[in-house]
Length: 249
Image 1 (cartoon, rainbow, N blue to C red):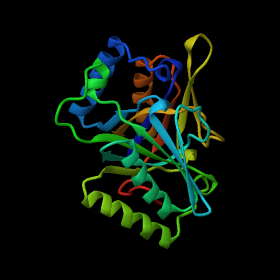
Image 2 (cartoon, rainbow, N blue to C red):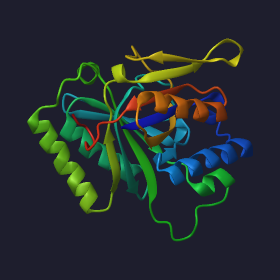
Image 3 (tube, helix red, strand yellow):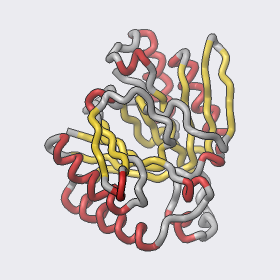
């Protein structure tokens, strides 16, 4: 099975603080171990909301809201990693997806690169940035309703073109939150797991890890180690649809 482990933004991240060297070292060790064992497949962190945008598509119109902003509907249904020259170009790709999807909410966030963690400038010759495109879940998604063949065909057409032109790096679709779990930090720093479904999720996504593990229990055990490295951040564990792409099922 494949799982997505997502940790949420905290006040330090929103203030633009870089993670401590202890966190960077510990997370690097966990990821390195996961790469060696084949558990860790992919992952990325996002910059604070000041470097993100939201697209709200409704009735044929698409409204763009630039950060910073607080969390609202942060329940993720699908995600795609794309490459673009700048945020405005990424917004154009997001609009293409929103047009294919119809009424929807999409968030686009700038990805934290290695040089961002050290405070170094972007290396010369790097022409494109990476952006994470997050499609938010709605009632239809949470109830397991399948998208119409027409919408699926339209989205497939957009993602195929993005892949052909080198824009699309990867894309995934999540199962409804009923199959997931959430960890929050309670009294005295104790971590508490709650099974889905989640009525709401208002904490902004800070980053994710994509894992291959035999069971949900294994994913929760890995997420416990992941959460222990962080500073009390909320963590979600979500099941991925094997073999599916953005905006499916």
